Image (cartoon, rainbow, N blue to C red; front, top):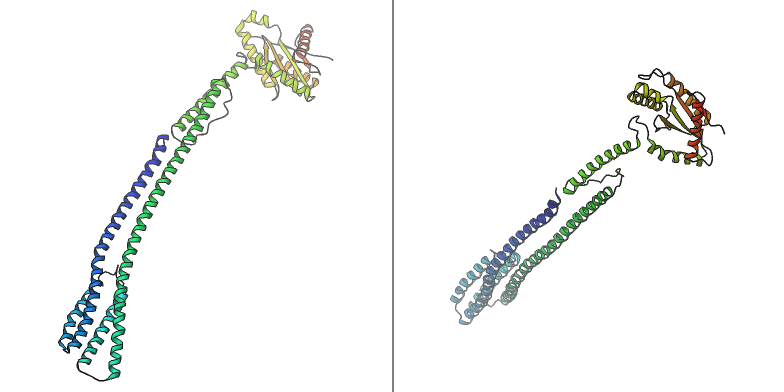
Length: 422
């Protein structure tokens, strides 16, 4: 995923999430509004029904009173129509269980029926002039009780409808406020999340770019440390840049190693050249003197090499130099240093090797060279000058003694090893 896609994906996902929430909130708002409108449309008619029942109930009571005062039972029959209207209104209220308390409605219906039966019985008893005192007292008590209970139930019914309506309004309002609150929270969280992701991507990109710039600057200023590679954490544009930068570092490192080898290697013999010797010898000598370990330096020179070039040509001389270099490398131990000193002269540095050990080793090498079949030339011999490092030595002093011993080897008839005697 590219850096652009990373920085674009989070805002897009946040916007999609936010629009989904807005759509959901709008849908909920529409449903709540429709619910409120529906309840509102039902609320007023229900209150009108409850109010009408209150009036009808009062009219019913007056009808019974008028019937008794007029002394005519026909008035009682007119209450039946009022009773039917009250019961019809109660049935209408039963159709709205989400607003009307059905249990309370049932209690109202029961109390009203009890009241009507007892009020009818009381009116008929008075009109028929029945004198049973205990019976009349019971009916009067029932009429008063059911009358009060019915009035109380109708009033409570009205209050419960009002409370339920307000409760639904409050719930809807709370739901809307909750949606508004969460919409604000989601908006803030989305902004914070977007900001954090963009900051993370920005700082991560800046950090990796800074590392790339630092490494490129080091290389541009001539740095030769190619061992470090940049870590590739992603496959975006920066990751591709780091990948190819590491590939470039690999190529530069290989080229640098090759160039370094060329710069310190003698082209003809593939031995260490004079530059490499001048860098290695002082360090090896200083370390040997510091640790009180022996170190020997050997100069060797091909005998009559000028005659070989004159008689067999320079190509033959080059082949002899190459063959001799191979013999020197084969005879060298792991820590021995072999280099071309110049022309037909070679140098061997033997760390942690005593003069006796070095002399024995050079004797074996001399015999190997003398017995080796070189191309174009019947025999090649080599003279050796060997000197052991002493306290206070430097490279010039020990090489001067080695050169002096080499000169003595030449004077003594060549093909021999001369060691510096203290």
